[in-house]
Length: 84
Figure 1: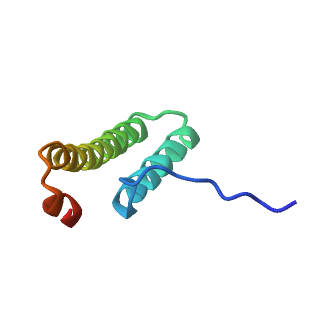
Figure 2: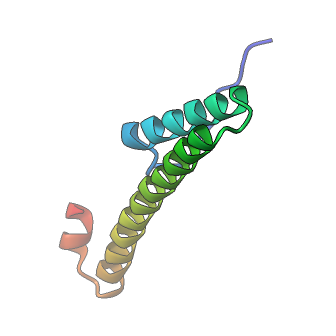
C-alpha cells in the first residue's frame, strides 16, 4: 500500500520553530542518557522554554494577521483585504 501524506495545518511552523523543537528534543535525549543530572535538566528546561517562546510568538503573529484580515473584511475594505 502507498503511504498517505499527512496534511499539516500549522502555517506558523517554519524553520525557526523546527530548529527550536530539534534543540529541545536533543536536550531531552541528553537529559535521559545522563540520568537527569542537574546540568542536563537545566539545559532541557532552557531549550523547552525557548521552544515555547518561539512557538507562542509565531502563533501570536499569525493570529494578529488573521484579526487584521477579519477587520478589513468586516469594514468592506476589499482592496486592502485582497492585498494582504
